[in-house]
Image 1 (cartoon, rainbow, N blue to C red):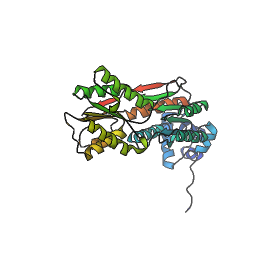
Image 2: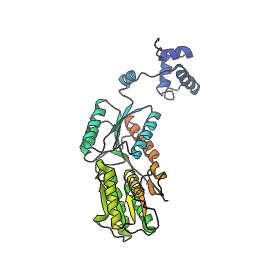
Image 3: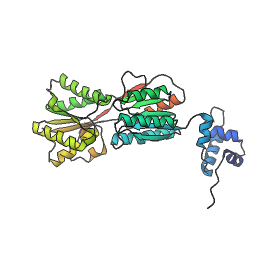
Image 4: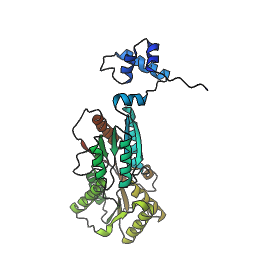
Length: 334
């Protein structure tokens, strides 16, 4: 089969009886800058689509010094939160004509470092990362390369870097108050065993609500889940709490919350005025739960849009100030 001919700027120019320079201005998004009329811009864009024009990324990279790629490192792509975040960021990047290279750290500082070094070697134009525990040195190394970087979901205190996160402490504080209002007093807390900033803030909000409402809490009601053996670890924690006669479980992540619901169903534990489960995040699994779960819904679309907006502004050099954004979350009460 004969290879399909690659469509060039000159081919489009010949069809439209315009100069290749004008075609280049339009296809490189510079029509307004060089005062190309809207009518000509529409004709060029339509003709390029009809002829199947594809830009030469290598040539563009050599000419502009940009690869039009972004490196994205997330903690656990099997987590519905991160999966949705990745999809949202990829969609937002496409609006700016950028492609996303994905990496999954599995919450490992070593894997995070290897992914960061790979992206640096690939000369990505910018990075969006959810830092793991003990990844501060890696993030500092990225900053030293002058590659624009934005942290998402987690932050590193004291580091002069852009980030977008939700108000973890406030969201947990508000949800804890809601279940106290319903009369629950012996509230257990289950979290992933990480010292990440978002989990630290969530626990702080939980404890603050209990203290202000004079609800007793001791170390026996706090349980850290083993990330590597999540299902087994959650089951052991739930069994322990049920033996203690708790009346509520606060799950600090959707991964914990989903596993808690599975264990409770196995034990035929029903939601009642005397027992409830609440959770951070609002995955689709909660919609299928055999009893309703009040939860904290993170505005993933808003986070993705904001993190891309900040990164693009840094890549294009239109902003040099550090933006550290905290977005409120929404409570969903069932």
